Length: 243
Image (cartoon, rainbow, N blue to C red; front, side, top):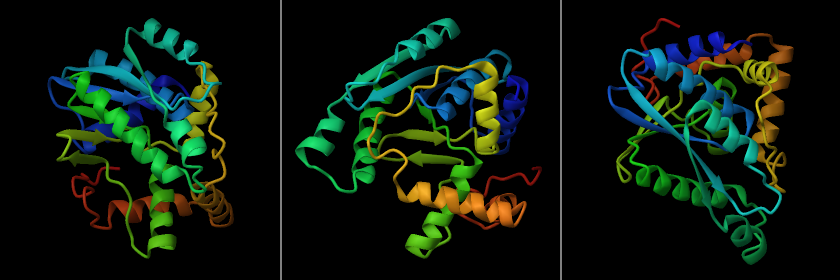
């Protein structure tokens, strides 16, 4: 997939849900994976021609694993002219050594988000862009349905009162397979997560379930996404119906 195609998906999400306003400074949370790097490339290009002027910076929360090398991401940000901040933390040590958590993901996410939000505010940003794509939206809905008994997923735009920060999700119209295609085409410097819990989570189970459902019932993922858009969920009301 070419950058131009990625931009058309991103531009549509940004316009449909009014994600960008004049003068925004938007932090991109860089996990060093394929999704956040795709978002970095897209927003770096979008800021050059979007009618509302906005600025971006990139932030990575380093959880403290010894074998994480972010040099190539640093070089990428330099080549794009994007300010890049690495926030050093001891989150990995606290979770895996001190507390020996058997289900580390939710605590890790909470601590990582806290460190990221602090860095975002310190950088003077009023928004943060998360790299959640269409598969993430549908998987989160399925997790909520199966494990919590409610029809719910995260919204395209969320305002965090306590932080006075707006979260936007500009990749929400992109399939994960499109992102993989883009990353392979541009040979982006993806860094694999060193987390020992990576790939062994409830989300991984839901991901493979959705894959199977979509294989057995072609188009089911798209229909689920449409159900979310039309389901009167909080935060999805801004949809313009043009998708």
